[in-house]
Amino acid sequence: MMEIGLNHYLVLSTLLFAIGLIGVMRRKNLLLLFFATEILLNSVNIAFAAISHYYGDLTGQLFVFFVIAIAASEVAVGLGLLIVWHKRHGNIDLDHMSTMRG
Amino acid sequence: MFEAIAFYLFAFLTTVMFFIAVTTTQALHALTALAAGMIFISAFFFILGADFLGAIQIVVYSGAVMALYAFGMMFFDTTRDVKEKNGNKFIVFGLSILAAVLVVVIFAAPMVSTNIVALHPMIEGAGNTQELGMVLFTKYLVPFEVAAVMLLVAMVAGIVLAGKKMDLSLTLMNDAEIIDAKKEQHKKVL
Image 1: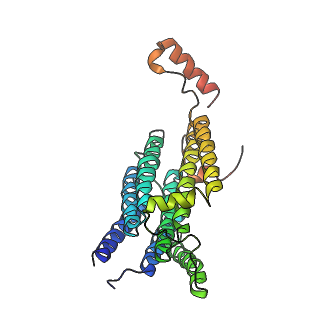
Image 2: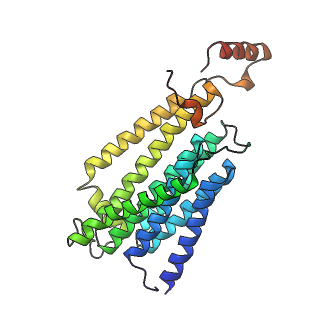
Image 3: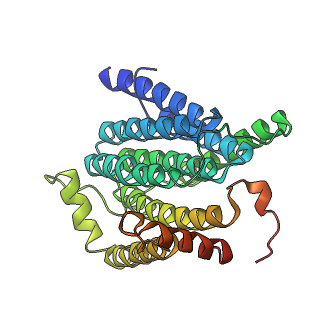
């Protein structure tokens, strides 16, 4: 109980991943959907860092590094697309973009 | 002892913050809770001895990404309540927990089955940042450069997508020009 091992971190990562998944499934607003995906990425980052620490291997930390870079670029492109969509249609709800009219 | 206290404290705080971010109906509350959760997650990196990643987490996530979201929220109508899907709650929760357990199995299966040998073991007598730099600029140099190009592409895409009509300044135009610009905007959206 008092000794924090790898399993503690993996359980925490699972918990946060479940929270993120709940967010992805119940959110309708696209901006808040992005928030939920950030939670997913962060929970995986914790698992990577914990495995890296407990096995004495640096690969996990490097993957966290690249995941953070990918998340940053995803936010930049995604927010740009959201702004364009909002200028055109006046909302960012998922229900309004279920059909692709081009 | 202190490690356990810190772990449980920050685990509780992170879970609560992310739960608020997922369940609240106010977009501003979600943004604030998410930023707080990101900062709490950096505490785990510091506990795990990954100092560089902890600093990166604070700078990139809490600084850049959250500032970008806050900037993007200025474009959207964020004051009204967010409507949500009202599906079957048991299906949603069940699927979430199932998928999360699956992820842990994916992570844990190779560890249980074989003895892992460190591919890039920790280097003796070097700080965390130095270790990361040594591996990053030798083994992972090409992915590093590719990530740099990807960030450049993302930056150009962000400017192109969000920067339309940014050359017009409302304070430098007189009223007639503003009305003309509005008419033109109604004619051709974007």
